[in-house]
Image (cartoon, rainbow, N blue to C red; front, side):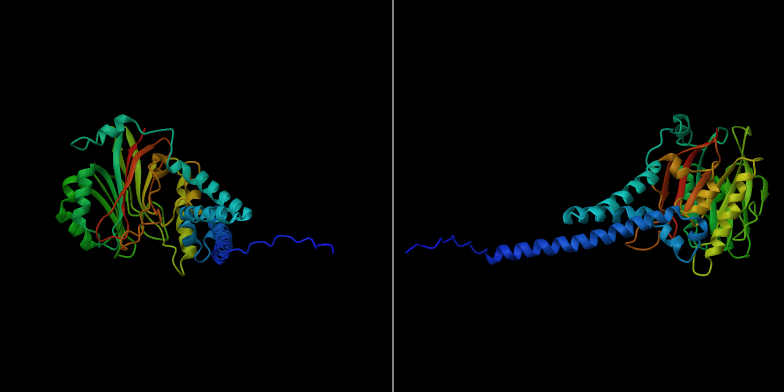
Length: 358
C-alpha cells in the first residue's frame, strides 16, 4: 500500500508574536494617517504665505499666516510619521513644506553682509555717541500704558539707545516715563494720538527736526514722524513710529488698508526712512512684503540673528510666536545685533537693533 506524501506541519506562531505583528501594523496605519494629515496641513499652512493680499485679508487668514514658521515643526513631525509608515505621498508633501520653509526663513539666519565692527564698537561704548553714523534703535508697544516705565528707561540706558519708538502710550504712562528719567537719556520727543487716549511716539538723544503728528496719513492711528541728524548732521533720517490696525474680527479689511497706506511711503524719494513699531503683520504677510517692495528691508532679516517673535509676551507657559514688531530700514542702511527683550506689563517684547546708516 503506497504511503501518502506528508508535509511537515508549520509551527504555529506564538500569541506574543501575533500581538507584536498586529501592534506593528496598527502603529503603521496610525502613523500613515497622521503623517498624511500633518503633511497636508503643514504644506497648506506654509503656502498661505504666497496668497495675494486680497485673500490674506479674509477673516482669520491673517492669523493663520502669522503662524507660517511654526508649520515647519508640523512638517518635521509629518516626516517622522511618513518614514515610520513608509507613506510616499506624506513624505513628498512634508519634504516640500520643509523645503519652502528653509527657502523663506534661511535669510533670517544667514546674511553674507555683516554690520561693520566700527558700528558694533560705536554702540558698545560707555557713553552714547551721537556724532557718528551708527545708532542703537528700539521699539516697544507698551500695551495701553501698562508697561513698566522704569524698566524701559533702564533698558534704554544700558543699551545706549539713541532713538526709541513706542506705541499705545497714555498720558499717565508718559508721566511715569518722565518720572523714571527718560528725559536724562532721550530728552527730545514727539507724541501724538488720534483718539486722545492711546498714542504713538518717538524719543531721541538729539533734536527732532520737522516733527509731525502723522507722517503716513493713516486710517489706523496717528504715526508721528521726525527727522534726526547723524554724523554731525551730514546724515538725515526720517523716523516714524508705526501702529497699524490689528487683524481682529470685524477689522480684516481695515488691517490690510492700514498696511497699504504704509506701502505708499515707498514712493517718497525725498527722504530716507526708518519705520519702527507694531505693524501687526509678519514678513509672511503679503501686505507687509508689498510695503517693503524693492526699497525697504526688515532689520531682523538683514541682521540674520534669527526669527524675532515679539507677541504675545504676557501669557504664562506660552512663548511669543509671532514677529509682528519691526524696524524697517531704507535702502543703503545695514542692521545687526537685532534682539528682543521682555518688558514687564506689556504683551509685546521690545525689539532692538544696531544700524549703520551709510
